[in-house]
Image 1: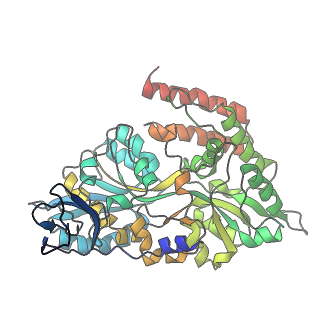
Image 2: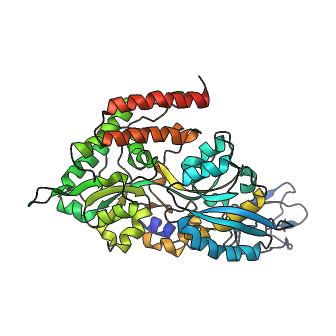
Image 3: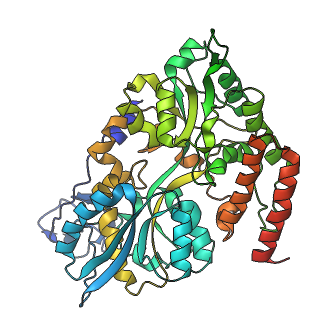
Length: 495
């Protein structure tokens, strides 16, 4: 890591101080005479602000220095008691309860009438049920950024643009996040085609490649991750190992988990298809592209790694990310995919030293290098009776220190990375300007992420992949996906 990167990742929290600098009358002999129309421009540096001040000098010279601008946020306090229903991710329940103590002190008239934890598995289906029946939640921080457009297009989410503009440009510690601190890709992911901001990102990351450094050395591979998908397959085959006594495979080159169904596309399949210049539906939303050369090739690529090379760890459809972390640590697999920081804690707890494993951008395709987007997004339901009160909950919890505590992977705001929790990552060579290399590679503009029928389409693709994993014909299954996918798109968008 270069000096500049170390400087960036170790920045302290911005300190805000206010100073009032009054008008300074400058009199006396100056040794020369200024014409009445002469203008002096000078840069004035005051605590918290640097501005160019223009003063016109006529009979006397007067310099007015602009006072330092201290960020402010005008909180909303409802006149009567308000109760909200908050659906929280299960791993955030303890922190949420702790932070609510401070929230209640600041907002005595806003209460969480129902705090419901929910696991990742089944979350999408639960949200569909609750939102379609208008039974809650008022606010949720567990939305995947991939779900925001589908839910917005169904009329389930509240427009946040006006609320977002209430935030100051810079963070106010312990109060609220600053607008400028959110990663551009994170805001782009939750901004709809009509300009609506449908959510506020809490976590934003892409899927990255984790690899076991010692296994690479043992296999005689270069001391770096694979650069392309073809090299990824070659590396995987070289990493495989059989038991000399039984001849049975005891190490596989790669593997990836997925739960729920959509993650087959988002963990690895999408990176290959997008990287080779393809997509899963057309940009005009009229056609399912299941039979395109890029999709067919990607299916065969990964299925062949499993059925022909025996280089992909078999329990893909049943294992959790903790299982894959353990497999990577124990040398059962050499490479795996996961969101950018998901496995960091798991690998550390399993005893792997920092130098024993690597975290890298995913392999590149023939055209580009892409990854899918992952994360958590705050959103307010369109039927919430007290949206401004719900916004105050979001603002309080999205303050960078609290955001960091409520985020298990890559935070969506630069200032949250200054929290000590992330100091363990300070020497990671992929840390660029406070984020991991995967964020600029996120394909947030894929038409797949812009449709209300997103989950229906990806489920079709996933079911086909599962069947092919068991030996079904790739072309046959993808023809079925195209036929059914075209029907789904026609229903949503018409002819």
